[in-house]
Length: 288
Image (cartoon, rainbow, N blue to C red; front, top):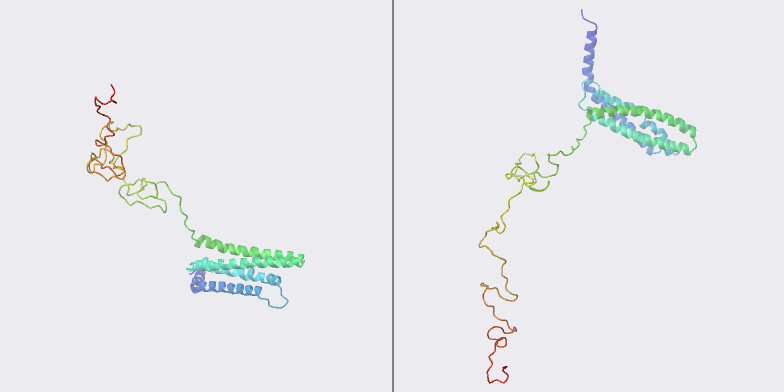
């Protein structure tokens, strides 16, 4: 004997196979219809339909086009069709994003129309009408907020991909934007300069020479001993000899320098400069 539940389960699976391909189409129709209704409400808010209509009056009547039954229920049904029935639709993310966009548009103009209507009622001294209308619109805001929050949670949990945050630098790891030395001998310098290496990175080797430990005396060459220096060409014993101002350079440091015009005569030919003089005996001026 067969159980009476078997034909029911078989019929349910067949019905699911028939309606499963239509879920995306139904969700698209629901979102499209809500978008059309929102657009109509937006046009009626801006364009007066009669000569006696005021902007605050149109804001009060068109509030329910933005925060009403259609704008609250239709996007929620569309999202539930593509996400809560197995298998999940491949375009569920796109439908959820469209629903969130419609909720955001409706919420913005719902708040604007509510404020405009409330100011108009208070300006006309309609306090009781303003109070009752405010309570009614607050209830609709609550229903609208619950539906929008459910759709937002679905999108945030299932389809939102947060951007990766850059992690802070770790000691021994290269910082972003700093050039890295590729292999070979480690250079010296500050990070970011050519030849600067970081300890522990691949491609860097320890220096071939080790420095003496701190506190160990270092040997120095004896005083007066030969000092290491460049040995290019002939050794130089001192600074180069510079000829006097106005004199041509001379190859021999001991070479006589010719006298220039205008200089006083010096040397053996200058008799006035000789300090030895011969005195004759018959000279009366000769001292005795």
